[in-house]
Length: 142
Image 1 (spheres, helix red, strand yellow):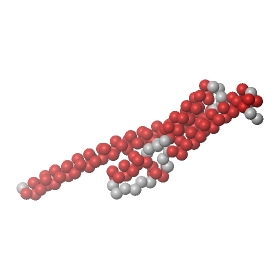
Image 2 (image 1 turned 180 degrees about the horizontal axis):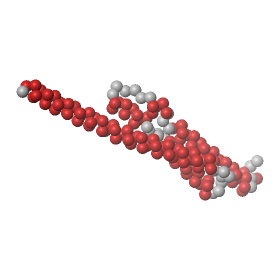
Image 3 (image 1 turned 90 degrees about the vertical axis):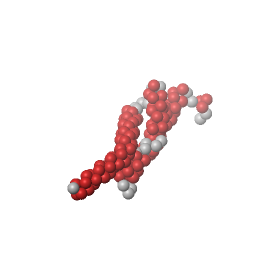
Image 4 (image 1 turned 135 degrees about the vertical axis):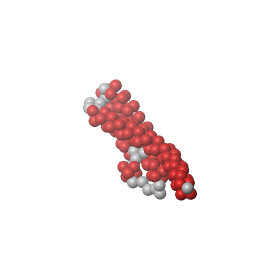
């Protein structure tokens, strides 16, 4: 059947189906771009800073944000065009994914803060330890 024989309703229905498929595809790609749970949980390093750096690297949403943005774009277009018969499932997936990406980004920021704090704390503790040794040596000499 050629496009010339399709009526407007058929074309709209076809476009709506394609739009929904695009939203679903972008959502799937977003989920696939998220870090794997094991990558966040299982890290190997020789010290705390190494663990934090590995964790911070693992807490990267990657391309998930871009795929989510595209899913939201096509979803919004479909809703405004009233192209979806039932879009509640898509809306729920978008909300869930948005929240998850926000959680990942928040964790990334917190780990980044620890990554810069821990070396400073270590240095301060080392300096305090050296001062305590100096006090002990002074007391022993008296």
